[in-house]
Length: 523
Ligand code: BG6
Image (cartoon, rainbow, N blue to C red; front, side, top):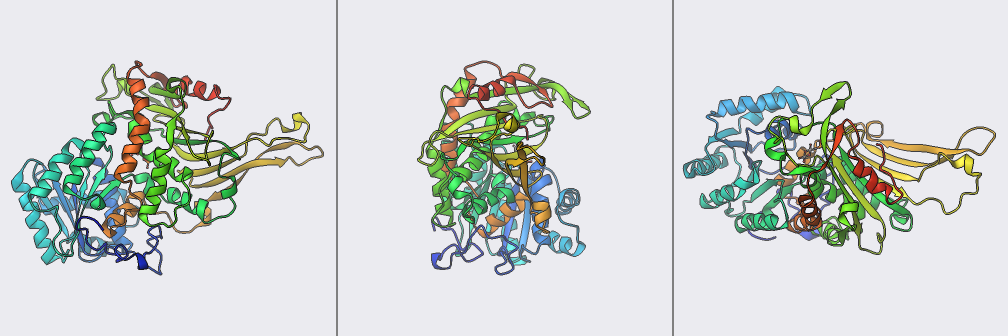
């Protein structure tokens, strides 16, 4: 274990002999994964992410009995709040956004460990106060010197906060304790800036203490890709260029970008979600079986895929981008991006992006992976579809198979979580007419337990020191290596196409597929 990282809390990290599968459900009664004593410090505690996701997730973990009594939550921000004000803010956030029901006794026990430190990132005294606060919590609350620092702040502030943590002595663990830093994306805006950012963070925290959040990896349906592929015999023989024609990974959203100009303008859809979420999904679909679920093995397989991935050329014919114009989202008339508050009237930020990739490996040679994402599309849906080759020969009258499309295995990541297998079936009647039917697995009907929120899973893993679901440095850099040529090409080629809100993106996206004789799925 590198760089002074202490015991993980679950006691499994240092001893490979007793290694337990980190992908095990934390609710597994045989080995409840309860975090050890620690405090979680959130920088950027006044932001949307903290209010909608992080604070509710902390409460949900406490409610599920997965946080120890010696847990503390510390907010750091410029607001002139007292501990009580902070507690009231967390209370409202929990009431509004927590997944599990509100229980007064859980809340009261948790809230006793809330502290707020007021200050700016350049304020040495505030970081000294933070250090003193954490020290007193170590004694009063028994947090044992174990501290996780969650940077839910703009990346330009990372260097300063990391330096402050180092200067105030907060980055270095003492004795058996641990220190971890949690970083939210974007991890840079291209390969070069990602390298810089990584080196700044790694100057202060060893890579083993850095947890980069890609919240898609915390989703149940995403972890289930591994179960589907490696716990079953059925799918593996089909999982290659022998049978798969192409793979489509779609992350469609119906929301617009009102209120998010500060983050999104100049970033765009490809940097926002393809660089991270969609390439991670692709890596999980395309990777080989890891020799174990030990984090390094899992990461090594994803790294191999990303290193073997390249853009289908020429880039202009095999990518598409667009920006939403006005239109209708259901019965609501919605403005275009340029009319949204905070966006420049001549903004060239893309809100839709589609790219075609190939993985240079024996398994995937010649199989394109199409990745697309967009805002203000027809509906909210994330899915991964393996579209199979057509049967080499159909011994039926052609008119009887007209409505038959290619077989497909669709992993429905959200919102209707499940898996669909599409295949042809005989239409009842006296003739041999064949049509598509779906065989369906749905989480809602197969399981009684509701899925935890991604942030619950990921925050718990940080506190346990389990890095499997966090992309490492190398994955981030390889993802930028894939995306950089596309971004450079787009930057040099003017404005994105416009598409009407409520549709499935710009015409150029349809054309990109049509050129290959394929079409996007209408999920
Ligand atoms: C975030 C992106 O990472 O994921 C957002 O920055 C996007 O633009 C969000 O809306 C979607 O997350 P989810 O979990 O709702 O699919």
